[in-house]
Image (cartoon, rainbow, N blue to C red):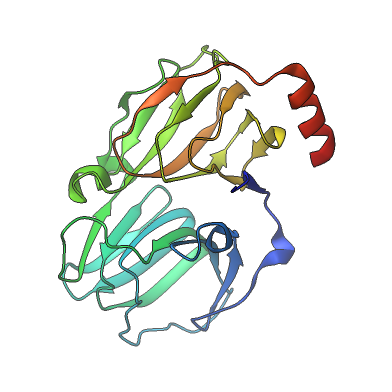
Length: 259
């Protein structure tokens, strides 16, 4: 049975990777999803020369979110794009592109999938900027959600959004499950605490991530007023069911074993 996977920010975990001028921090998602999903934090090396050769990545689907800095990237299908903190790019079937310039200590979060998402067969890219996005009410009354449009674009195959706290509100702590095959959470700012039936309580801060296995029982127990969370799920539409909390003995034993 899959277990909940938590990773915290580590500056010493970045290593050279596929493209010169960038370093990569792997988040371990490939190991727990059998390679179906890969999640990495990618940083530009300071003063690295521009990598302006046209290239493509062999991904069926990818989501890239800018956490710091800026990047000018040119796509074959949508032309030159400047992305900054809060910008998101999602694409199908590896459209050809090239990275022209970057700055401000560029850092991005990248989640890719080898599984087709929706019925798009041609290479295609979509860009959404923070200034063009709105936050709306959603699943939890103490959160507001910025939808990336991925759910509609993939006809429900995958969903992705940013979550922020409604000021002055707090989680209800109800144990629940989601009917999901994949759930990935990355903390962009602030902190949040979850409790899981298999690993006990986990505090996630900026740069932390959690992979939640299908149907894992869990509860959100606390968060800061400034927490900002990026969440990616598959499928994009899913049921959430309230469940009973694990027994005190089970929770205590799991938490002790996880320390």
